[in-house]
Length: 232
Image (cartoon, rainbow, N blue to C red; front, side, top):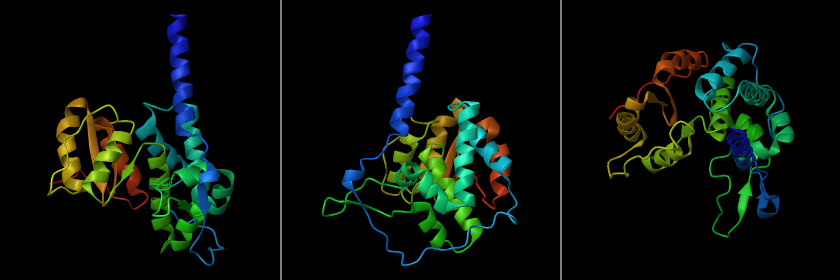
């Protein structure tokens, strides 16, 4: 019994180390194409959602994988990114860097070139507050393997292999006429029997317990973010 407990503890420690390991900054060149970042902060006063709504989303998507303390910690980090992206980039630089899609991808020179202030840059480029909120939440939940983003079917398949709800399942190969919604609809055919459902909004998607689908749809709608079942 004691051996089993020790094994489980070691497995959890290994998981956390792998997920939150510090990037090798010696292999990264930081460079921004933005001449001037926004000086104002996002305005959460007029938002229809609160921190409790973010925690509800994190809990609904991740309670099978993260304990209550971890759910609260993830929520606090996301909330800081919404309140003050500049501060988030400074305090949680490792997460900010690794939350960038394909953050460690090398260019033709073999360099990894990264925006030094990822969330602040996202906020600077955002057309309005709510678009930034959705972008930031999606990017950070993807970092925590609770959401995915892809503009093509190949990326959707890769995201499913990385997401906590679906990493243990095998999905079919990509076909010539595939696109994200079509591929996720096909994925649903395989995971619905497991009590799971994939939901999509443009290129953002998540997988949840089917029993929690309606609650998640309602929670995301508070951010003017509409998710629906992918269709062929």
